Length: 370
Figure 1: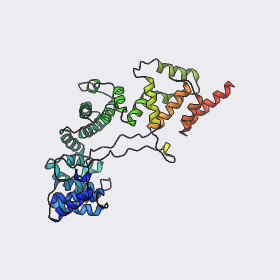
Figure 2: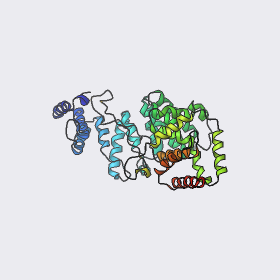
Figure 3: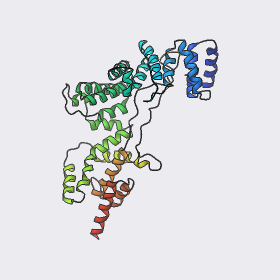
Figure 4: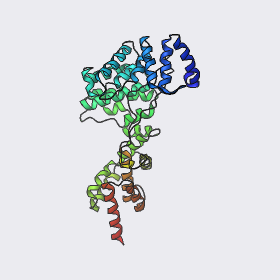
């Protein structure tokens, strides 16, 4: 609380205790320099302080020092070995944030040279973190389980993933956990008990609607999933009878979700396109989730930030699809009044071959009616 409320006072206090040889204070002073709290941001000085605190065997200092080491694919062998050695010391002592950071630093396949069977190691580390009941850690554990289950076509592992998401949802990680439950990957064969539906407890659509209250990516998932059949309309664009038959088949389906909600979610998704020149054609990349200072996990030493081992959900090209579907909806009059001008407005946002084909189609049909 001192750090958040009075960083200048914290700097003076930690600086005084550092001079007296207090390891926790030395680490905490490094956190201030790393994050620019009460002092000018100085990464080099932060590393020096963390190194001093590591010599005094401060657990949080080992963790913080690893945060300053690059975690890239091309990171040198020496630095990879150093960070793993620091994290292994902390894991042996039961430091849960270090479990999660260690799992994150095992992401790249070339780390197998240093940690054999790294996939199993990641699950071991994140599983230990999840056992604390922390919603963020439960979500991170579920995400890793889901990825591995999909790659290995392992339904039993997927059951564990969905259960972890359910637990994260119940513990308060509601928006992201609900979105994960609503968009979890499908396996070609489900050879485990209970069934996917039993584990989920709700339909995917119901989970996405819950998630949509706090997530634009969930709105994209929900709206795009309902109208993704429209991708096939390009194939029959010049065949009015087949196109109408495709629309009729959709309208005859029993869909309990109000169409107004689905279209509203499409509209919100379409508005999420990245700003900037040419950004409509680029990926909307995910950003790191907000990191929280831990003043701290009941200790006197500070962690620079809490890691949850995952990225926020990415929009990728969902807004592009949402925009295309909205154009098609107004062009065909699905659930709404047919509106050629509004459809063209949506298509003009995209500048894609599909959008251009629809614009040409609408213009040619308009000219034929004259």
